[in-house]
Length: 226
Image (cartoon, rainbow, N blue to C red):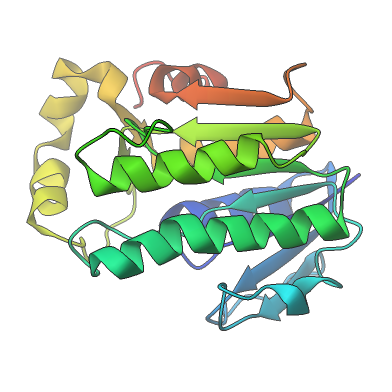
């Protein structure tokens, strides 16, 4: 029976990860850590409100005794300033991972990155540089197992307010886009299940595993992302 901590469970992918983990028979307890309340009650759920992820020192106790931590916090390019994007993408991820590593040194870590993440820092895209910077730190942090998920376009599945015009357009043309570019899409619920399953099954013998979009599709049993 696994104990799993999830950061960002009020978000799209994190929300699916939370619900899937709560329903999973191999999961004993889910600790959801976030800045907003979930509005959800479940016998397996422990909810921890934490307002500032730039300082996770107060999470030492909630992150102790965990078998895995899943980080789904993120921000959309263009929806926040560059400084805020870097803070959420890099600083929050590293600070949370540092606290998780300190409280549960044997825990696995599952990280929501993105397609094109560049650990070399050479990319012109800020999102790619920042995700790559976070990846590089996580892979060197000493976790026994780290799983880096690099999805392409994440299909929301359920209707939502899209963050920008590009996402509104992609959602509108999704049926055709999925057919034309099957390797460039992944359903949000499929991605979330893969992020949970990989830490429950303790998959992969390597210390650090990078999973590109087609790898995630294969894990989810959905090569067509449909």
